[in-house]
Length: 339
Image (tube, rainbow, N blue to C red; front, side):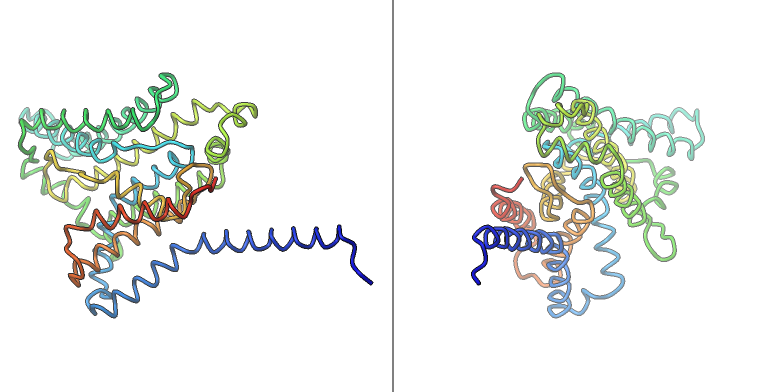
């Protein structure tokens, strides 16, 4: 007996839906599969790649961009973008160093209190810059691309003025006291890696288990529908930029003791690396969908690529940014039409 046409049509729909779910799941684990394949390739090309010291070095260097990328994930999922995070980090680092040096010269506070105040300033500045972005975008009705492109130039030029075109360098007594924030380890794992892990875990919890996270995804999927659903779109968007600003502040707190200085080139191209980590991790550039776990994998994957290039000299290390740019374009091409 022939099945009814309606039964055949519904079976076809179910088959297409099952295929779509399978493709979606494969897309979710794609970055992880790519990371594993790269690690195997790196081990085959150079045995030093798989050493504990090198892997910890990769994770430590990933921490700065990884922390920023967690905040960038929320912004991109909500349908926004921030091109200024590298310049923002540079200015925050410069203000931190200038303030700590000024207080040290005044001898009004203990060195430990000065370092703690510098860290607090970094977080407050990051939140303030993020809030300014959010208000300009929501209240000022200016496109995120334009706002953050403008502040990219503002932040870096202010740092250049503050440093008089040179470098702001932290004084030696403060460097010795501040150094463990970057160089110390806990249970054999560097402090920046721990901070990255806690930031990623907190970001994943907020995105997947809170009303705020659901609202971020709803706004990115369809802002107009989100407004009809009584979601406070402007407030949520502002919050995503504030969250990103705080993440930039945290990354800067960890970065300053590494070199102990801030120059006009500090944080150069960090925005490219952060956006690349987010999109390579599977977050849709058009917004509405993304995972913090995927962003973490994307950040580590890009660092592994750079590390393999450094160890093997397959291509010049000066082309690292080109590799990241190609990754962004390739993923955007694959995501075309995706919402």
